[in-house]
Image (cartoon, rainbow, N blue to C red):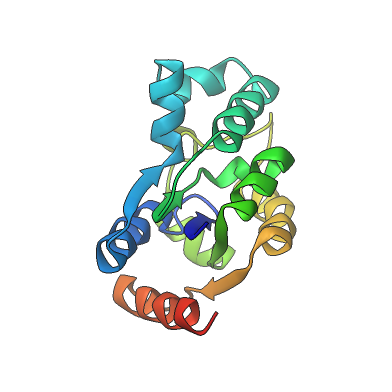
Length: 165
């Protein structure tokens, strides 16, 4: 399978880069957060309100069931907690980690709760970043460092790296 799955922290640009990448490659684009909302018939924030574990179970089930070809898949930042989903996404294509520093992310993000970010009680962006970074690196086939780059520069590096792979 030749899908490209984008993983990374909220605010790293998975959906933004994903849409443009899909256009350039002539692929379909799939936002797995929107797929979750469609399948669950409610907003992400409503699912998250029901609790951390419940959301992870839904996220794992939906992402592990994605059947696609020639598709750029933008995932939610928390998908890396879902082992079954990540193994599935790796089996149907290339997983790309869009990497950005904690400092750059905090400037981009603003209010985490308003973005539908999965946080445990008392968890901060710093805790989240430190917890997730090793998981993103574990699952990534390709790492794209976006530090100091705009959309076009990140996209150019990603396309070049994909061609070489």
